[in-house]
Image: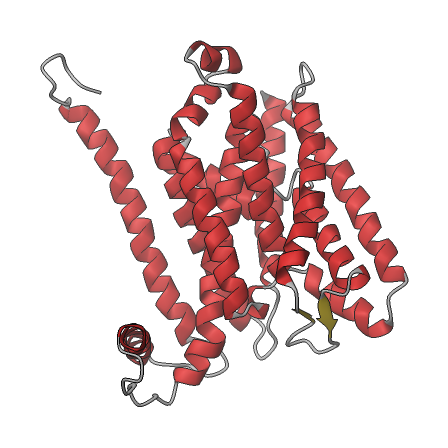
Length: 371
């Protein structure tokens, strides 16, 4: 917003400054929570030692890349726990939270449905079924009956591709329903419930013919847990989530236009159908990658955008990055609590997100009916 002389109104500057400060404050909170999450667990590590280990590890890796054969820093006593266990788990929670949140906020805008998210629309369950097909039928995973590693993927690429195919099937059904005149948010959610039931039934069918060890492993895997990730899988997931986030941010003005209505967006020159179809495909890809590596983690993509809307409004320029920050904070905090709430047992993070997200989901439904 500018005056005729090119200056920006002071009120508008203050308005945007508050939004930027909120996002930066959320990023600072995420960093503090990141260090805290690595610090606590079965063995508590001082925050200073965590920072020192991370700094030394980063410097060693940069030095090794620039000067192969250079002497590395002497490993600290906490390095094995930090770099092999807690760091990938914390980063997986942040990346998954960002991915689910940005997919959720994009779906809510693209479909003009406040109840849209990968979980509520059945896309996550479709991806879980595809991953189960890949692991059990195509043999892309090694089954274990231990709690530590229920499923180890030996071909994450094929698993992701199969999960993505089934996510696309669910996405296609959602897009067809969204074109039906008068399709309300409640209708979309009922369609999501139907799709979730369909793909859950398919997963149960596969489980029925699985061995005891396979059954226990697949049931545990579908819970949704960031603790099973390894560095190569984290790299794949991070690449997809970062690319998708950049894509959604680049389309922020298109989503703002669609929020005003399809006709208004078309009047502004937006290719509504193209933006909608491509956006849903990208959201489906993000959901497929996260589900195939971590299992089903529900309600993050639904709750975070609504929390951010309460704080900074509906403008996609701020809503998308704000939702990314909130998603990372929420899932990382949930994973941290899940690791200590019933110690020495470790709960899957999806248990806590379901407890947290279900009341919010019911509230949004009731508010819709009141309207």
